Image (tube, rainbow, N blue to C red; front, side, top):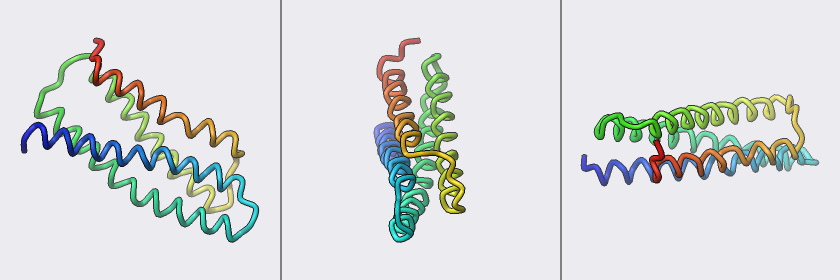
Length: 138
């Protein structure tokens, strides 16, 4: 596979995965504020469908990233920092799955304000990762 195609696939799956990482916690905000059973049921359905959709995207983003890394070689501290942040994002994704399961079981322990802050984590990580990849500062 050509380098350009490999990189395109990696970036495309990363962007798609991030769409889910941005929207799922927003659904959690709405779930935390839901006032009726019908609203809660609808939001839970949306959240489950989104989580099932974004998980394969995360796997494909990681697989193409590993393929890209092995095809170009390991080099630079920036790559190690990026990989550490990718591990944080994978943990965030898994944490979203646990939060969704808690909502499903009626065991949500957080208010909508907590979820609003939680929702900003992938945005911050994304900007740091972009900087690391573009600038390669170390």
